[in-house]
Image (tube, rainbow, N blue to C red; front, side, top):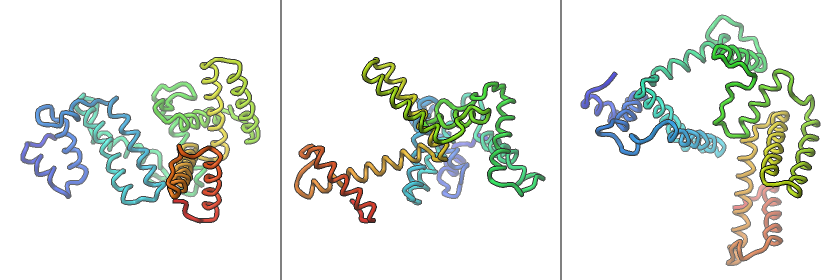
Length: 281
């Protein structure tokens, strides 16, 4: 439904307008005659990186337990969905209402134990298995023939590695034990070391990728989200390096005025302080 300008203005300035208000704001931003020049110039490809970034900012707010920030980040992520839907509507592909209908229908279809007549007397494992079975049927309906078809290429590489490995594991292509994965990591590390000393950049690049892929598989066997684990490691590194900088600043110095031995000692001190529950910054 297209609103006249007066009705559009009323909707946009109504704080109780809800999702319809946001959809109308997006339509006005993209209006070829009166919209924002930057927003008008964008397309799916240019907006997609912002969509990914906003999803990570949601995850960051959750990890920090910053609930006020999370409210804002969820709004930013919702706006990305509205943005893509507006561009799709302009191109004649679909409208925002179609997006809402599709996800609603999918959730109802995938939860027959809630919205249908199936029993709720299933474990979380049973429900996950049912979910995957229904997803497989949907993929078959889309003519996705291969086991790995449909795993989005735009996912973060570690996340996509785990999804590819999960798909392969469902048809029996997996190491039986975690120990075998660890042995494979050692093997890949040796191959990388050999490539580093005897082969060229392309081979080193390939061997490093192989090592990361097996590390992702270890995360899957340990039931660890590798992206979350790496985010945690990044946060720890940032926190401890900040402690190094603070310790040096107390003596009027910066890291470039120190050396590795001193900074390593300060790192160990920050590590001990953290384990003892002492704030490091």
